[in-house]
Amino acid sequence: MEMQIDPIFVAYREMRIRNLPEQTIAAHLFNIKKFIFRIDKPLEEVTESDLKDYLEKETSNKSGAYPKLISNSLSFFFNEILKFKLKPYDQEPIKMSVVLSQDDYAN
Image (tube, rainbow, N blue to C red; front, top):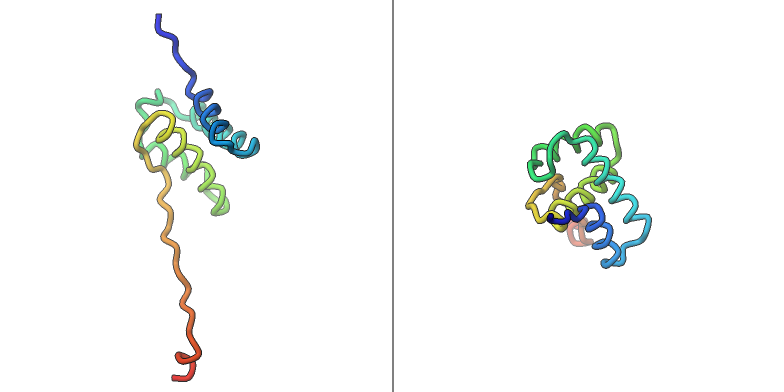
């Protein structure tokens, strides 16, 4: 009989090894457990579309930091722990502000 290792425990252990703060670990575990509870399929069958649908439902009317937190939690879990290659959240490119020099003002 093969012993199954709980992926939540593996995620917890990996975060401890990486020396993440306890609050960060708790937030990641909460988001991972909530996703697993809400999704209605085995983890092996989860697709990028499932993750994006979940994020859309969970983050509507929320601030910009909240979607990123959930996305980071799920990305860590699926990419680092389960070794899937999923990208649940596309970050918007950072827009650089234009700064004019004194010469630009003079012209």
